[in-house]
Length: 300
Image (cartoon, rainbow, N blue to C red; front, side, top):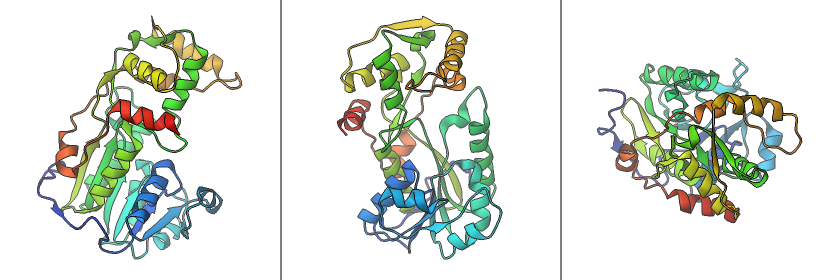
């Protein structure tokens, strides 16, 4: 069966399920959201984190298991001992380590990234591709979900950084005038997608893109962020990418100015739009609109 053919996967009950869910990267933004949602649904959760102090700062009253994925020791295997279902919200570059350390009969839900599709490969995107290859060639059961840009998480800095920039700039300088397409996904829909994936009994390894329902030009996205943040509209200034990249480097030492890397600016020139029919059909997730997601984000 092809790795991306998911129609033959079978369902299991979404509530309860076969034993606890081990969440790798539980102290991260997506990890915290997932742990809270699972716990609220009555599912037993085993958080797997690198730092006990960072986990304590989340305020979640669960005892974690500690493992540093950069260390090739027995800690990860001990942390995953007895796992039936494993949800990993850490970078996909660690997929191989998790597969190696996990019980032989465990099922998996990994978070990847649509960065794997970029025309300008970097360490992040290459790590996602490497992790996906490791999973798809493993013969293990589960799915890797590839979200687009995630916004709306507690402490996230995608739309918040953009809003901070818009407060300081009289106009929005964008390569190509900001006509490249984006399709952001709200954190609540990422969490819903992982929950739905955990509720399935997958036959072999699979890969699936998850994204929001609205495909908009980046200039429209910036305008929507300004509106949601209560800022007046900003005119868009079309500029070449290279002076923006240079300006981003020069602006890094300026206190209080949000940091934007040259690679981020370059990616503003490529479309990031995807078909989410498989997400809707196979996971049963109907993602919220960009307007609703931004309203939730700035209401906090």
